[in-house]
Image (tube, rainbow, N blue to C red):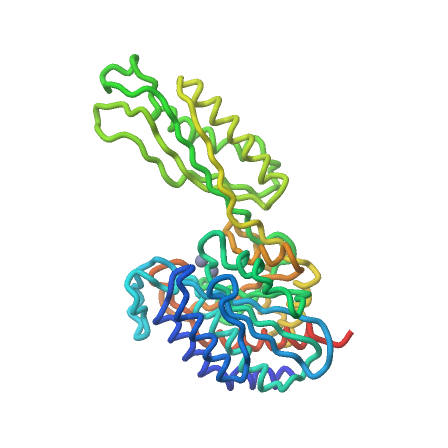
Length: 393
Ligand SMILES: [Zn+2]
Ligand SMILES: [Zn+2]
């Protein structure tokens, strides 16, 4: 059976590469994936699917049933690109200035279309339904996942488990990785407005200096995690922007700081806001200033379901040797796949796509390059997963 899956994955590889290159050349930003969505629907129609379009924006869904009754699983690919000017020099580099598929979502779509092609060749040789979800707007809140869920993408048929793969351009091509349990962080933004009293830089005693207060706040925030959070629990507070002042000899009246907080979800996600607020208020008060603090919630944390992760690992073992399957480390990035996992159990795995030679560039780099041969593994994995998960009960 392993040989058969590889055969199919190899047979559709030229089309997967062609799809990926078209998508790569025509990237679209989050919430603007009009052409991408139309391209996906068109390819699916050519394959004989009747895709549903316009789900949660530019989302596309297609369902394929096996010959025998069984469970319903969903496979998800995200489709949006990033506001980055491409610098790869590839012949199929982006034709849209300032927009680039730098997170590999072009690969995700192409491999899921590849799976659609492969499933057609498998001729219904599984039990149950496979729902293909092509999702817009992963890179920017509120996130296409939440919008597609609101539009009932997980219903009719009712999805019982969901899976995704994200490429990684620093991991050797063709390696698969999975993580049972926590994998990606809840990502929240904060903004702190520190108000003091402005004045002449030569007469600081007549001012309440918000610049000095801001510098103390930045230092103090770095102690919130180290002194409040249990050491074994992952958490990050990063200040990413600081704005205040115009002239070298003027103390301004206001400074604005903003940044990101990463946790693995509740209860810490709420607790850390209280601690930060306390530290900020106390610190600015020591400088005679006041602060307004605002938090904006982003994506929840990704907690992979251990049981479904094991299903994915078993599927991976159907196509590659155990040594090529990693246990993924937890990362503090964010991924809106978390919203699906709040509704149904599932797991998001990783596929290595690093080129075998030349300098490596991570995701979100303007020089990102991927090894397209890894798509064979990606497609074979999707097919193996359908066989592993869709069995008669
Ligand atoms: Zn990304
Ligand atoms: Zn991504």
